[in-house]
Image 1 (cartoon, rainbow, N blue to C red):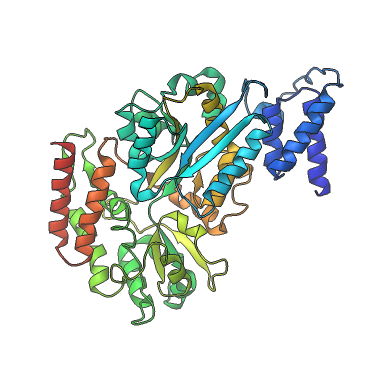
Image 2: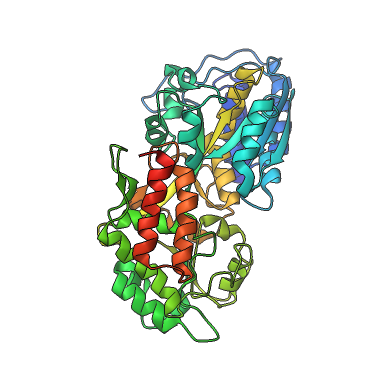
Length: 472
């Protein structure tokens, strides 16, 4: 421990011993210094033992500024002895070390509540909905990591606990203000089912800037579609490098959707009563994407799998690779060129960056709801959010994460691009069938990429999917 960290730790310990901050605040501040959870537990245990012989010291009078403890807001919490039990998580495989990341967060929680144990199980992305629904019915898990794409459907059904009274409680207001995009969660219905841990961009462009510069451009090649097309065309070297890798997930999950939105379209009109897909500008952007395959600029579908694509990009086989942000954790440790994360160019109507949230929710069948709530609060607090997003390759949902460690371990390109992706961010549309429509629509667009149908046919078929799934 360096001298500055040692001094800061001593100051926090003295404040804790003087009862100027709670055990929870003490642990959170120690973790924010970058001290490992196991070491934090040892420090807290030592201080707690010493505290039995230290007389209570009243808090120092306010000097007009807020103390470090006060900046967290008043958070009345149960004592360490009050919380006991086992909490079972069902979580998504964001990275190859996902369980280890959750175990790290659990260690911090156990520094406050040592009598709570945890189990972590991963679901698979392609069967997530079935696995979660089965688990909810059987009461097999207590806390679930879900994505926003499923949230409108969950909101319209039962199975998850309604956390509205807890989340809107005045004592939680200070913390609630630090969660970004809560307005989106609140907009889905009268119930609030969870708290966000991250927002995830779908899709970003991983860009080999050395190739961009060799083609005679800089990062502003994304400022217009004609310039973008000129650049990716010049970066394409037959038999060596594709200028733009798209469609590598099924249709590129939400890849086409953000182009739909940039063209002024959406699956439904704002009142959710009519399709808003089959527009000339939507056909235009769909044709633009399909033409990349026809021109040999994009690798034929199936050339690279989702898992293999990051290595192909690192090897120079794609000058630009379109993907969600999780690929930042899958890239080789050493990439032999300068790269950036950049948004797609503007569409005919607007600049759009689509993102969705990851949310923790509680099974309504969980016996100890208070314990589960304390766990969800801890898992989504600033330091936990900073750690998880930093190591799982995405963006934190908390405004204070940047000062609590975010950007320490992740690729520097991720934090650097954050303002670009926040500037024109949009979420999904507020209807329960959104996820089903999206999956079917992307499969339809993939047919267009493969040359099985024209852009106009594909867009018309997506409109039919919307009508069928929504029932209009």
